[in-house]
Picture 1 (cartoon, rainbow, N blue to C red):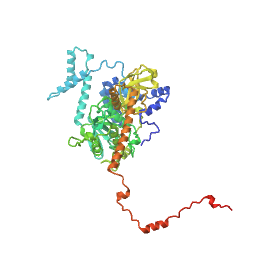
Picture 2 (tube, rainbow, N blue to C red; picture 1 turned 30 degrees about the vertical axis):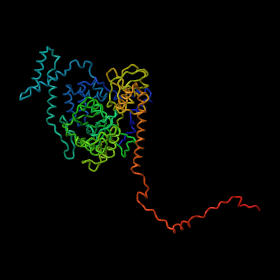
Picture 3 (cartoon, rainbow, N blue to C red; picture 1 turned 45 degrees about the vertical axis):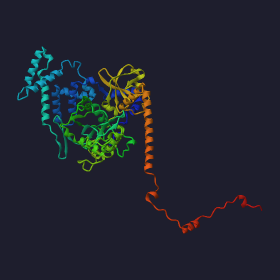
Picture 4 (cartoon, one colour; picture 1 turned 180 degrees about the horizontal axis):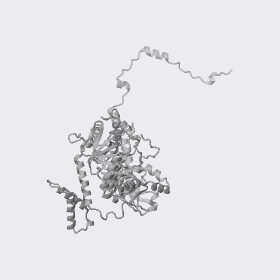
Length: 591
């Protein structure tokens, strides 16, 4: 259902988009960047506790609801922030105009009279201890404890929390505690599917792309990694709750983190295109963004990167599951994948030691690229084409398409820069070059800012192209240009593969640079092709030795017919008369 392709062109990689960008004039690029404020992102130091609180408020106010509920949410937001309703409205207007950057801009005197973490911890600990073992303590009594501590420290009135600040901290703590006590997992209610969140909200799944669930698992299979070491990969999967259709994934050896979650989310949001090497019979047509991102309470999902910056920038809300059992939709996918796919692959370890096959390490031959193709083929051609228990004779993909309230917004890759991995800052060298991971990257548009410090973002699955961001005076970052790794810009090189190659180059006593990396890539490619060719030839020879090629007569044991004298006579009669050779001179005799 990619109906908006004509409106926004799509690219399969950063390199293709960078090619178009590099053919654009610099002044045109500046005009485009100036008109599109979504390509400006805040620096990490701007994401303070105050900004995090604003992000939570914005998420709650951008959720769909009626006017009465919206008015109630604005009052609750004003109470949470300790400001007026008019201030909340101004905050929303600032966010709509400037995006996430708008939430980070505050007054010039910010931070001068803010409550510290030690005071907040003292207030909460005092309240908790005062309500243990049948004892009771009021909010005002907690403030008296705060005032007493301030007197002991000889602090002035402006240097410790006021009673309004103490009340605001305790009110939020008490409200969250009551919601958690009331929370329960609703699950299916008749034909309706609902999810209960950790803070007591009930999310009713109304259609496709309404609620997405995300989780990780370490697969029960051993693969050969870039260092030729056997290792078990991690799979991060995102599934639509309404249709049970997988929306996106990330497969790698890296342990779960907020960056991995963001890359899986990026894959889910963008349209998916695969080459002929995947041998797909169908298309993976699901894309878009959710209204709610429903996850467990893992540290990676509670990270500021995934649950706040990405969610606020792309305008969806994050919700944590009440208990692990609420994630059954994702767990069922993991079980089906294990039973129907992994169990028959070489290197399968089994779910436990008792199920582990013999010689599991000896049979492990697959790489991460091999398994990724197998998983995509299984999802697209099998899992998405089958019906779910509640799909009513619709395949998962058909149910996803039928459950859309409207065509999803078609994001471009540049809209999802915030989901890419972020690296430390780099200094622009002479001729507009940047050094990253012992590689030299170059861009024509960076020549004019040699000596400046920039930030970069990249895709760990292909580091041959990186995105360069300029650091502005207001501590925000604005996209500048794509930079390409010299001599290997036409290759595909993952970060892990590159790090493995660097180790080999150093072991051989050579300097790590673009030329040595390219030479090692060429050597690996030649060796891989030779080994594959020789292996195919050896297999073919061995097969013919064990199973010699026989004719159809030999295979079917057909006896040859006996030839009789009568048959010979008939054959002789049917033979054409022999040709008689004559020369032209013999035909014309002299008169």
